[in-house]
Length: 324
Ligand code: P6P
Image (cartoon, rainbow, N blue to C red; front, side, top):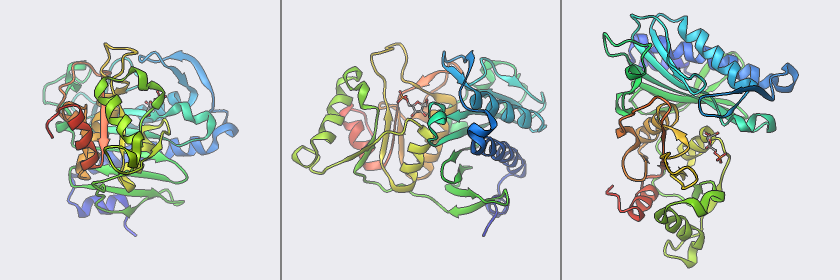
């Protein structure tokens, strides 16, 4: 049995990054405990606030955000953070090295029905001299990430982590340690499983309608095989399934809010998940370009997402006339 800290040292991970990841895990353990308590701790339900996204904040969104903020700002390595639940960046140690962007509790619409949710995080380095109180300091593309991952609060709490040397899973033990449980994850290149919110079908662009339409035709159609569908409405759970057994997950642009590229957020959903997917030999695309190549203009900007099994995503891209 190998502890997270032992594994990272064995991989010769930068010691300050190991320290930061340890801080993130202390926060995620606390969040896991609060989630396990659920109704008993009176932490379900919503607040009277809405976040910068215009979404009503769940009590646990706020709790998870506060736990992460406090612990990260207590770590002198942290120059600042940007959260889905914070309108503006929160500066930490002005001489700190790392910037952390995070979605404290992704999928929180599932909390009150006891379905899996997760914490998503992305680690960047502050460019020396840049002010961590300014939005511009965080606007780095996904290729600049030095680490990314999520903790999925499911039947077990599982950390999926990459520092650029592959993807590994660590399960939270009753001892409070994250233990290595799957090493060097590689996504199967083919799949029969797709995940998309079909209720938006009439709003998609023609290429997505055509691609999904052919999946639905199954063995009678041009794809020549039958597909199964999943939709958990929790990106962390969907991505974990893709990393574990393959598949394709998409939340594409749709005409409901045409000015927005998509629903999911680039800095703390699209980029960290794309880092994991590419490190596991999958593809993560906007349908027209790799997500991690997108140059962010705003911290809370959104992005269209299609990610998963390499050969399946390549077929989706061909419907969009996008080069692989
Ligand atoms: P819809 C959760 O709110 C989230 O950001 C992702 O985790 C999830 O994949 C998506 O939105 C679900 O969106 O429109 O199906 O509720």
